Length: 226
Image 1 (cartoon, rainbow, N blue to C red):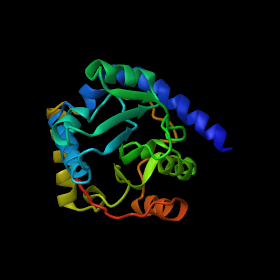
Image 2 (image 1 turned 120 degrees about the horizontal axis):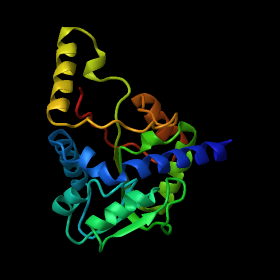
Image 3 (image 1 turned 45 degrees about the horizontal axis):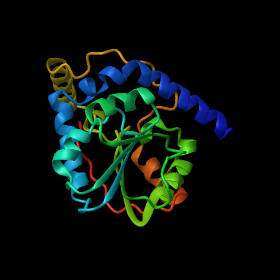
Image 4 (image 1 turned 90 degrees about the horizontal axis):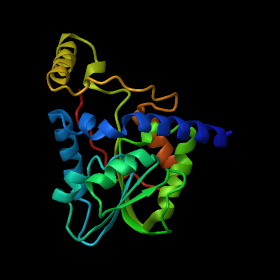
């Protein structure tokens, strides 16, 4: 049942985070490629955040984006981070000791109803089994103001330039791997993410949102097509 799926996912995520928390920011944010991706995403977020907004970073990991948040979002917002992993949150608190970090999950957000104007989910939905996604969206909706917005980014399963075949696509993919190696972006072996971890087919993902949640998709942008 869904309870078993959730327990399996939670256990896998916590085990992986325990291995990675101490190096997560260094691996996933410090390399130039990741810095560019993170900065571009937060600039997009900043277009939708107003002064005084209450903002939730759901699946915040070790405050991976918070350096960019502090630079690009209004100074007077309320910013809260929620993550499943105590280890990730410990790393987040070391960097931002005066900030509000809470332990919780997509299915159990430690927040009161309508507490936030903006919820940010950065590359985290794909850690969730599809069967749990509708309940996750319901829980997110609970903690959002009735006029609130959800902003996220996710890796693509299909539709990437590298999936199209041909010499040009192959050239770009090889160039990508070379840049990753030169910038040490993907040097560390990762723990097995488990069977729930998956990139989305865009149409399937949007169908779940449109048909099994109260959210209405307002804008979609495709970045980093390689």
